[in-house]
Image (cartoon, rainbow, N blue to C red):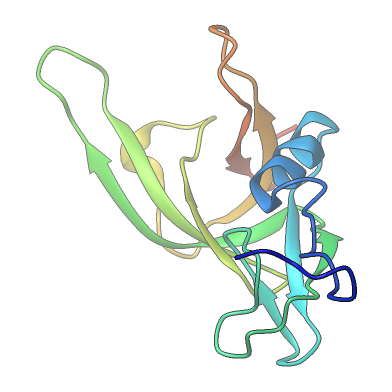
Length: 136
């Protein structure tokens, strides 16, 4: 399909939502999107608002505080146990991560947690992890 000289150019995404999310992580921020059409927080980063189709999602920065909604402890044979959690952020979105700073089996539903950025030593992109809220 070709465009006529009078037709508007297709919108160009300067940066993908995932790239913008990672840029916030590089700055130590946990960002999420907000859909003004629904009034809801949106996470994982998207191009359009779920349920509304709104293409104008605003970026916001979370305060980084949340509550463990669900936890699973994985105990691989011959390796230390670790947890996988769903965290309900105070801003109204949920994400999957892990809680560090205490033994895997001590992580409980309802635990208040604080966000930190994990920067893998192998150069992989940073990602959010959590610690108990009172840990510094």
